[in-house]
Length: 394
Image (cartoon, rainbow, N blue to C red; front, side, top):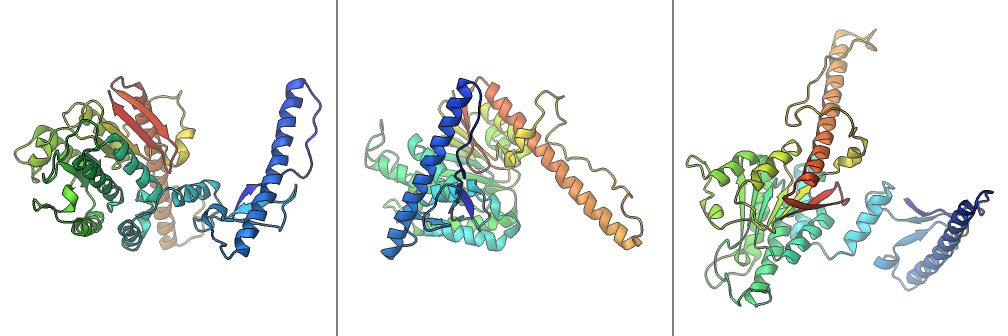
């Protein structure tokens, strides 16, 4: 349970200058208003419950007392396993009122938790997926490049948005487009997504096939609503280089993808240490154009970017593997040799994880600074989930 409002037990008192008095009056007014609002919400909730609708979306609050008063608390149900974090409550609320998640995406989330429980948090999820799809809709996107598929949640969100864009195009609803423009052309609307993890790619591939088969067959014989959904397995940087350099020895056939011109949206969600390199490669290629949206995930890195020392010396190469020092003997006295080895191994793993996290935090901060200073880009960072940087190529 997460506390939504905690009114003051009694008005605060403070002697001081005029500004302090005015500020204090504002605080006391706000607390009085919150107490009244809590009472009103409690009454509405009781009315909804009496009508047999205790889970009404707009009234999903549970008062800790029948009639909250100053000094009491008013709580909101946490929809993230009762962890009590207000941010998760707000995200759950926003997600519930941001449109329904498709059955296929819900099943993909469940399959991801079952197949890769230790990494399931890496999925974009409902709210972020809705935002990515909305950006594609507003942008009128036709082609999306995703660097880092994981199990395919965001790629499916992109594909579903492109299918709607294509339908608008065929109906003549896209500004500047002619009815039927691009109709019946396989892959004219497409998502190209890159993934190095074969376990994640296997899950994604299975759901991509299901999505394509669920779409109506086109008169021209194409499937997936005329939207291509291409999964390319392998190292993302090597694949991007093969797309930009059109290397003859490339093991994957990306000629069709490269021939269709620049992408409208690029989503970066792979190795965080290589974000800067991905961006440099993209901006120096024909894979992007003026107006392309480049979206980078995890740019706030669990909020730890706030702890970066921006006045300190430059960090080590963020793409390098962090070093690990030998575990000290201190604190291991009295243990037998096997126990000492186990303790040292655990300490070494913890040190490696901590150092890796520090390197990734630094890499995200330096990437954000790099983007802000790049004259080729316009950019805004949104504090949604782990942070999204939305860039527009000038």
